[in-house]
Length: 260
Length: 303
Image (cartoon, rainbow over all chains, first blue to last red; front, side, top):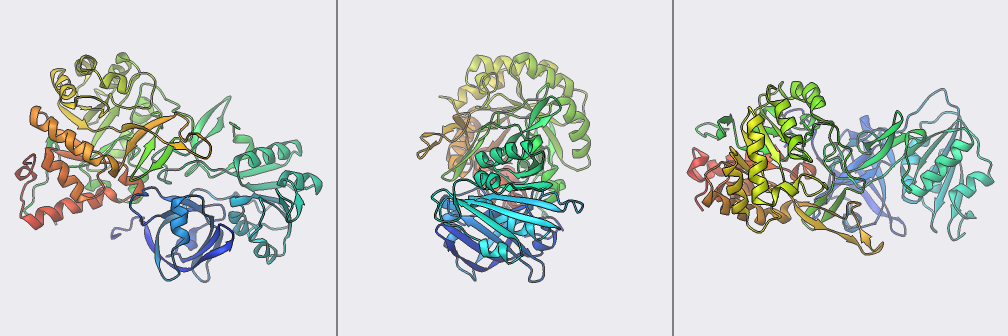
């Protein structure tokens, strides 16, 4: 339908789609050149086929492969839409729009990085670590089953794990992990549930380390028009609602005004 | 594509090249969608609601999907009329499309102030939003009572230099009475319908999904209600109607036109497909070609 050099949703061929951990799926798509402009921390809108589910599902990009022209998404089945995605087979197509949002800010001068992920916030950090120069250490928190650990380790980074039930790594939160390991660095990159991000932000502030957080909010369009996915962001002495989809999803922690 | 087909419509004396408009609040002021579509192809861009001063809007979550629809409780977050005049009018004027400004307010005075401020501005039509269900003062409180509909319309008309479309709420017992009240107040046209107040509860958390508790339901789920209301109003009121509510494609738009709509506005569909407005336009053209229709007046309100 796109015949006027405008952006559009694209039917993308699915190369792979399967469960990698209970309730966690990995989808690899031939990404129609989306990969050529995609950056770590951005997301893509995935659209349901079932017509009763109107809104796109914003899914973070887990890996960008410019050689093979693919994007990888690792997503959790959290509702009917993601359940639908989980049942799509390799060889079928899915409608995508992206990449959307702003990725992580990567400063070449910074040479010591702390990467913190929790649960469904882990996937976008995998692409991120490929672009960070210098010393980097990854701290991941899961409820029980971990995933993607080997994929991180493949890139030569040390990964420390915390689980709620102690089945892997330490029993506790990723915050416990950061404290126990006396994590140090010049920049924190975090993605995960809001309470975790708040705790990471507080910790980073105490440690006087800058932090970039990837925030989440219920999203409508994903392109900045519905003004649904807002978060409170500092604006001088006050704050304003900024959109996760186009102003984020990554914000510096000192900008964020918490409501948790 | 449009050879021998006249799609032009007239809303209060303003000529639109075709009936496809955008529903306020789903299209910003057009900028984001210009990456996806050629705005020149639209009959009009109806911008997101504009108040005298910036409004912060409601706390999140503001969005919840429902079966065949969605609830929103944005709360009319906007940057105010001065920002609109300085930034959005110059931007939209680069395109060959009409500008319709959705005007919001908490009081009668605020509605009039925005309309007065716009009176010498280069915009084509005013859409008076007395039907937003997500704000505590103003909005739908004006739109659900015949007297206040008539009063606010009459008052705003004193300040307006552009024709005024009054956007009606479906959250009423009798839409025809409300439409007549707007007509008595001097409305030049009507938009219907705004969203229907609804609610979704997260059964795991045992609380409403929306921070505002309730929100406005839109999307295909409400289309039969919109079509019915356009049909009823068209039978009793002479004013041109902009029909909206769940228009996803050309067939949906034709349904509204058959029910009596002069223009059609595409809303929630923009979130589902950023090119939805163009798809609707192409669908209308295809329908006309299929049935040898030369002008939409041949089928408008014939049901």
